[in-house]
Image 1: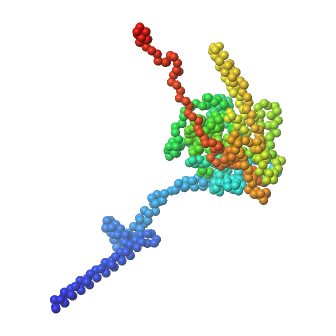
Image 2: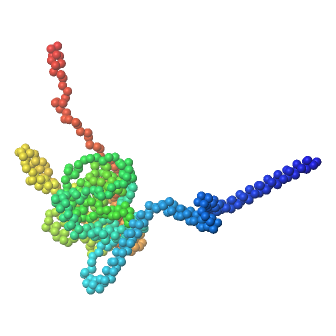
Image 3: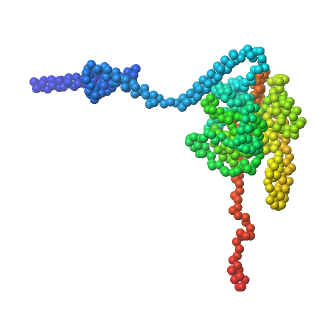
Length: 549
């Protein structure tokens, strides 16, 4: 019995010891978990801090550890916090940061310029009141918010942020460039980027300066010079942009079409080059780039091809027939075609300039002399009457098949060149005379005159060219009348009691009822002329043997 009692007591002691050890482990685990509890302020826990602190003390073994223990703990916290606050490691500068810096600079520049203008206006108030004729003519900035407000009635609009940035960037461009009559032409959608386009006119001094500089640089007249129509080459594509363009399109064809189509382009300030155009991809962020002048060859070729814009001015245009120039030239050609076909206004809003009409009677070249101006006696019709196409008219010149708005006689250049060339033989003289006789009879092309009503427009496919619409039929004083082009989808013209305008928002392509089919490649040329001298003949030796037999 005693042995049994002793055995049971030993078992009880073992159980007590196991319970005490388990409770001790539990308490240690709870204490460790408590020390691992992270701080809500710095995110660190006391257990890790004490471990690192003891490891640092044992490694460095400094003197007077007990007296400086708090200092060591504070320094360790500072080192850990300093490492976390390294912005280069824990914060990456977003891409939008550069755009914000550019916009802030734009706002600062405009604010400074506006303050200067206000100061100048305050100083000149007395002089302006005494002499109202001395008021300086300033180029007004178009307010896109008012234009977009009119177009919102027809679900045609740009975002508010786009309009505000366009207003600021256009205002800055007017102050930097010698331009007048500035307006927002429109927006062309691209596959990668979009084009925002501004139309403007150069002042008279700048036009004269550019013509003189062009003469001095080229050594030729402005008609024979093509340097102004050279593509934009001062901006190059990046590596990523080249991959996007090259992976999509084939290599361009190499042909010399300029020499085969020697039609002179119109001088800057006249015809299709009367206005200049600035483009950018992001208003307020990118700089405005002036497009080159348009050449007749580019207009003719643009009518034969279809090319979707990429958004890069220096991108090659790889089509068949091959286009002369890059995307900047093609963009300029399409802008000229769209403007010539879709710039319309209410009837009697424009009138022929009296100076031009007087000179028409004295000159034979009427197309170059006709200009228009705003009619000061214009009275707007009731809004409902603008549903008729006869109350809308074109105020842009018609483009001839030559790619010009003024007809050019090819025999003029031919006669000049024949006089300068020396004739060597009588045969050459006769051949030249025969060729000249073939081309002497050139019939001058005549297009529709300015201010032609839209009701006269037609297409070979018999599709409706225009359609009109009213925003409301109840409130004529606040309503908007709009006319929309079906030949160039995205072109609109509108009129209200206070404002008249044109805008284009589209892909920059003309409507085609049939699917576009590029022309076939040129036929393969023969390596030699097939004739009896290259035909295979029978061997004369074998021929004589056959005759003997």
